[in-house]
Image (cartoon, rainbow, N blue to C red; front, side, top):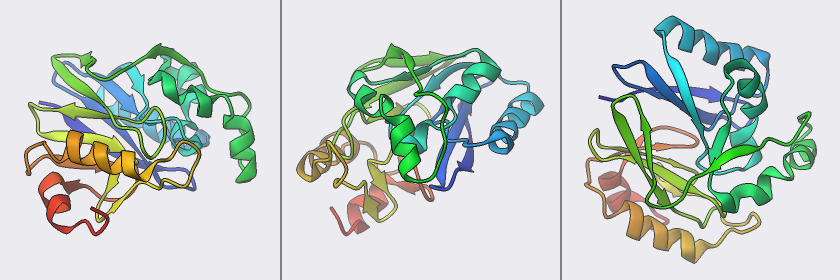
Amino acid sequence: MIQIKKFVFNPFQVNTFVLYDETMECVIIDPGCSDGTESLELMDFIKEEGLKPVRMLLTHTHVDHVMGINMLEEMLGIKAEAHEAGLVFLDHTISTAATYGISIDKNPSVVNYIKEGDEITFGKSKLDVLYTPGHADGSVCFLSRKDGFVIVGDVLFQMSIGRTDFPTGDYDLLKQNIFEKLFTLPDDTVVYSGHGPETSIGFEKSNNPFL
């Protein structure tokens, strides 16, 4: 069974997730740690639990979700993986961060491209990749059918959806992907968003005012 640890990092309050199972292998999703204190908080948890990080995954490549890539590469020796369509944002991480008064010394990079239908494996566990652009090109969700949860980045929030006024945002496409990729999941599927609290597919189908 997959265990999930959530951290809330950086001025944008990004949810960074560590997923692990009984083998102690783990994956880190959306490394938002923006300074040494936050990265050490993450590393301390990994060390205390005796975890072995094997993959670093991105739901999408907006600056708030990638701030910790460079630090974790140095500390853990693993590189990030993302959908290829998200490279357009990674290539401008330094300049985008600067507009918010945040300093990043180099643009992050990815070592492997993930796409719709891929299976992310670690330990005895697997996650299915769903391609869900609309908030941003390159947005993906990570679904555990066995454990009944999905990590959605900024696609869907409790009582809200991702912004579509950024470059490559598309409101109609976002709604289409939510209805076709997420709302077809069982109602009791737990939704872990990129910001804010957890919710469920059934709750959002019945209550989300944007949908």
